[in-house]
Every structure is written in C-alpha cells, then in structure tokens.
Length: 103
Figure (spheres, rainbow, N blue to C red):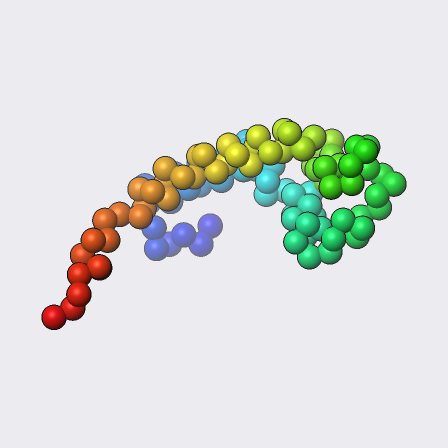
C-alpha cells in the first residue's frame, strides 16, 4: 500500500493485519456496497425484497456479504478493531515533549 513513511517492520505488521481473514472480507466489493448503502444511499437504495432477514437493516449484511449474518459481521469488525488497537497504540509513541510550552 501507500505506507512509504512507515518503517518496514510497521509496514509488515499493517500488511499482515490487512491481509488477515477478517480484514479481507471487509475489503471486498460487497463490504464497500454495504458501507455506501449505510453511509450515503440509505436502506431503500437496495432491493429490500431480496433480504432474507425480517429486519431491513440487519439483512443488509446477508445481502452484501455473501449471506453472512449481522452477528458474524459484527464479530469480524470487532476482531479487526481489536487487532489494530495495539498497533496504533505502539505508533502513538511518547509525545510529552510536544506538550511543553515553547520558551
């Protein structure tokens, strides 16, 4: 990816995370369509007659992500969040010196 500003070790860890099973699913065209529906178009952009769930919102994951239910997708997203938190905390570093008033 466009991570040239990162060290090779950090780039490798990020690539590993992005290539994992959980993140790969979330990088599919179906995931993009789900995101666009939720963020931009609204639920009724999709053909709601094709939803298998009785709930239009919860059925969107099944429609866009190959039949995966809401609980499964929620677990996958949570796994991605849990995986990236330590990486971001490591990158945060110690910025105490930035808080010192300039003289």
